[in-house]
Image 1: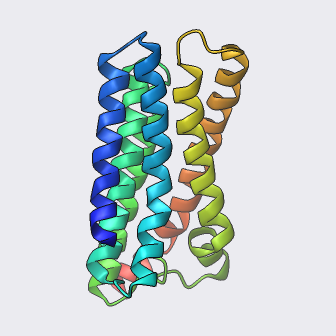
Image 2: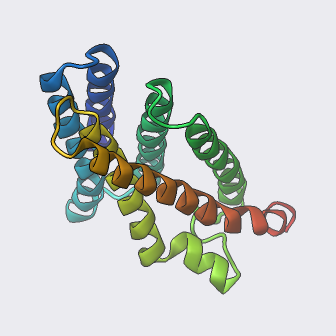
Amino acid sequence: MANFISIFRIFIMFVAVYLIYTQVGNTQAYIWALALTILAFSLDGVDGWVARKFNEVSKFGALLDIMGDRIVENTYWVLFAVMGWLNILFPLIALTRGFVTDTIRSAAMEKGLTPFGMQVNPVCKWITGSKFMRISYAVAKVLAFILIVAAKIPDIAHAEILWTVAYWTAVAAIVFCVIRGLPVVIEAKRVIEG
C-alpha cells in the first residue's frame, strides 16, 4: 500500500503539471492544480506513515520514496522555469545537486551505508540527517511550490504580495537544497575511497 501511495502521488503531480502547462489562464484548472499539488505533497508523509504502521518498511520502499521526491520536486522546478515564472538556474541547481548527491549516496550504499548514515562529521551529519534540517528543507520546498501555483491563479487577490513571498520561499528552498548537498560532497572522497 505504501509503495502504491508513493507512485500515486507522482501521477497526481503529473496531472497538476498538465493542468498548469496546458490550461494557461484557466482559473478552475489552476485551482485544481493547486489542490492536486497540495495532495501530492501531503501523500509524501502518508506513504512513510503507512509503511511504518503496516510494517511495510523496505529498502525498495525507501528508494521509491527518494525517487518520487526527486521526480516531483524536479518536475515542479522545471515547470516553473518553462512557464517563465522562475529563472532556469532554479531547476539547474536542483537537478545538479540531485545528480551529485544521489551518485555519491549510491556509492555509499554499495559499501553498506545508508543515504543519511554515510556522514561521519557531526556537523555534516546534522545538516543532512537531522530531523530539523530535513523538515525545514521539506517545508521550504512545499511552501514554495504551493505558493507559486497559488500566486499564478488568474485574478487571485493580492497576487503580487503572494508572488513575492512565493519567490523568496523558492530562493530559501534552493539555498537549503545546496546547503544539504554540500556535506555529501565534502565527505564523498572518504566514502568512495574508504
